[in-house]
Length: 151
Length: 151
Length: 83
Length: 83
Image (cartoon, rainbow over all chains, first blue to last red; front, side):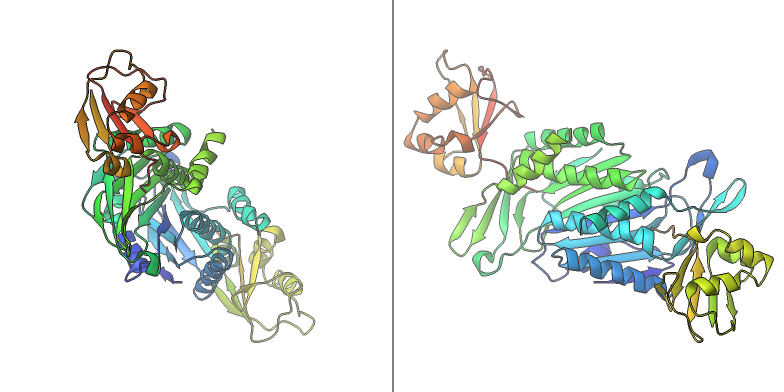
């Protein structure tokens, strides 16, 4: 289990290699990378990610612990950036390693879905009309909710 | 869309960066890495992956085309190794990039499930009793079948 | 008691952090929000729509009936949008 | 007609590739497998359990009733185990 909250970019290859370093019991790693998307004319700029230092790390660790309680996992990792980000920049990396691929897929999906509704981050997007706080999406609540009913 | 069948290892970070290079329309990349797993005393060695050059590339390309037909994807990638592999070595990388994470997760899961029952690769494992051809798993057929019913 | 404001709630209130000493009968998350709303027009505006207000007490999510006491760190913020 | 054998079918047959000229009435995947099984005890053993035999004609999966003709590349192999 590993959590990092940082301003700097991350190297996905190095992060995933770190998960399996020296181990031969892992058959599958599923990872998710979230990126800053440019929505075209309506939103041609980057964004600033605000967060709540202290609580962020606690919530990410709780999400990770929950994944380990639900699936047989060899290792997990969450790296989340904050601060100024431009279109195309990486925002977040979630990874789950397991002997088997089904557990790796489900756990990785769970990590990002739960993180999105629990970890205290807020996006302030640049728009041609000025900076605008992104509103939470009902989709994201529904995605997180789906793991509640499967408990 | 990109397919590679190669003896050499691959760098997951570089491969995923290549998918998004110069693009700002991608919000999500889900990737899967399969590794040679050491099953302990029963199977302490590595393996040799045989394949059918020519057909392998065609089948991987067909799996990729099917994923693009089913989901709104920005880019996909399959890299599969052959030849001699040791415990802990990477075997395969599947990646799906999309504006949205649900499509990226489903398509990546589909790529590996279909690949496992269609791409002409065969594992010859080293065991304390000598080399042994791995038998196909009913699990893998079931995993691939699940995408048929969802069509 | 330390109050932290985040995202657009911070913008409305006009400060990221403030130290407050509410009266003794302000002893739950819900009563604290009611009391904070009286501090300024910006506070009132920030807390007008309670359904979009999330509260953490000492860095853990809290429900309206959760007790609060002097010395607590109370964070108030809109639904999260990371990831 | 070129026949390619893979994995444990190759081991049983004892060769990875062979050039064959079946009689004219061997014109489908199924009749070709029947005919190949008569070529040697190794061929017979390799093709004994048809449910675990997969066939590709010109590098595409083929069903038992698919036609085969001179000049085709026919690959015969067990269920795949890559990934």
